[in-house]
Image 1 (cartoon, one colour):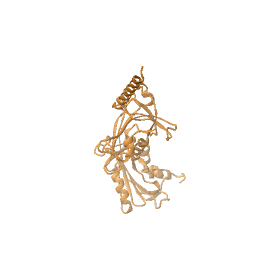
Image 2: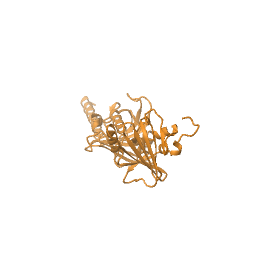
Image 3: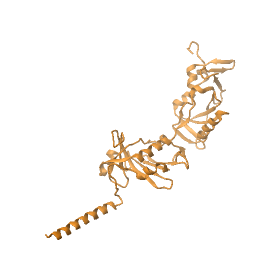
Image 4: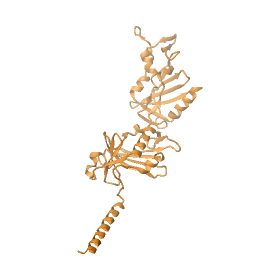
Length: 342
């Protein structure tokens, strides 16, 4: 074969290879990614533009939306209840910083081993995350799989991921836990009143007459107000009652117009030394405790009351039994027993 013919064949071969490469790169399923590449360039460029997050798992689809001109988020599928902005922020930051470290399997039959199977398949443990801006432009779309607890790239742990339109799985840097229950995405705080700030508590139960305990200073003991005057109260029971609105959180939540409080009610009104009065009303339905919370105050306490009401006025909360037990104290229990150490 002449030198000219050899050169012609070499050129034709190079052209064929170039054509094949171009065909691969122009395929809709191809991704120009390599080890160390930023996983989601559009998200990395502008993480603050995320306005919508959709999480699809085998248990369902959760949608979260950011409030206009705000950092606050709501759960579209839970009556627009506020979401933990910290949880959303962690997800956005994690994905924005994520890099593709190591290519893994391309075999669909192995996807479930690392948790990157399609979320709608049987027994799937994966989660499909979609992050978009307020125009609907997709900033990141990924199937989130199992985490690995070892150095991955520059991160202390990693996550197996796969792009939904690609069979290539990756080990990516970084990771975060995704709540499996919708309620766990919510901001579950109801109210938080420090027990040491409580000056007075009024308890009403159904049609029974209310009873009151109070004290004159934050370090003092509570006295139970009886018909003949103050009676020393059981210190343990009084302390327990004073903690009734400390770090109160819910297990579930519904709008008040969809979950009213029927039947006998327990009402506990707590007043602090700075003039804030917070009231919680509880009722039992189907062996569950549901509660509504409101507040009032004057002076410096007015702003605190307004903040509480802005958060609680629309909602009825299901609270755990142990938190109800703190509030469910009778006058008999509060009265100090003879011989008991105060």
